[in-house]
Image (cartoon, rainbow, N blue to C red; front, side, top):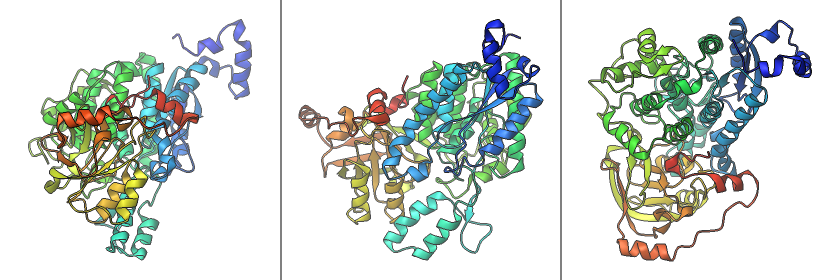
Length: 558
């Protein structure tokens, strides 16, 4: 078999290259084997990543057992929870592009034959996917796995806690409904193990979608980080990539329009983070099969909501693991003919994949196809004169009383301004909080608004106050919060033209987001609009702001 790595191993002129490889410890015998990149985001600071050294060792063992030579390469990551609500969050989405670049550089620079990607949290999964699509090698993904949930004080079962409990708790303490001592208990117990945060937040959403895309083995998204089953999965991922290499199946053979379609269906069914819309849109663009907000809207309309995990409901992700994980969801969707069976997966064709790893839906954690939580998807696209190019909301995490809400706009030009008003008791029931200039370019970096949304929830305002932004939300956010409003304010989008007190209508069921201002008045405001100066004029944020596309295009940098 002709190998890409022959470019650095074969022939007289490659004697210097072989010498350097021998400096790594390679033998002459190993020179004849494929060289496989084990691309990890191991980090001591990120709880979801501090176990990845063990995952990497297991992957490398699997590769070696199957006849390859593994080489571990590390990339960066940002913990969104730690980066939240300060300047660090400007860098989170930006890191996705840096990770993609680092994968491309490392793999191309060393002529690897195949790759196993070991991400876990938020931007690392799509970052590695974007990089892998550029290079187009046989590639398998295996994550570090989700964190176990915490439990309320005095309980070892029953209601669980997670990181979101802390963000809500801050608002509850502010409102006087939680004591400092109760918050301290949550601080000490809500994140009890390594792994990605324990609900269907962005990290776990993306790791589950890797299964739906066909680039990860069953269990990738749901096997807990601390289970030995996770290590066995990692060994099998190492063996699987060698099988793909022998069959010459590259990642672009798997990430096709069919795979993107199936991932969108699964996303709607299990109620993933709104960030998945951003990331899958960018991944589809990189794969050469672009999708639009209209495609997302269509997926929402045809796909039933089958799984309701935190933050949409009380259950942690481990409950989905217990009933069979993502394949169970896919099996139910297949019964409705909602999956494209032409898709190829790392396990073979989609029918082969489903036949080999599925058990029936339990009817509670995962509803059956004929008894869904809702006949439409968990995410909803909104359009209107505020969002001509769309906005996104996790409908499943909104109280029924707030599916339609009209109230006066409370306008803030940064997350900090909004938080000061919320914590200062200046937001009233009925208000619509508008946070702008937090988009991909205007932020820059499209910061997550978990602190203001959690504060609103914790202060008991989530059934009377809506929030809209050109920024984005954490997968942990809940309530009537509409993000990714496009065009963004910095580009002169209508969200920049809303005035304090304008009446704004959020109609989630109707898919509308409008301000009660005439076309003539909006035109007059647009004529007098002057874009603010960029917030950053040097460094990576300045470069990012100049290159990034709008949110409805996935904040994609081609």
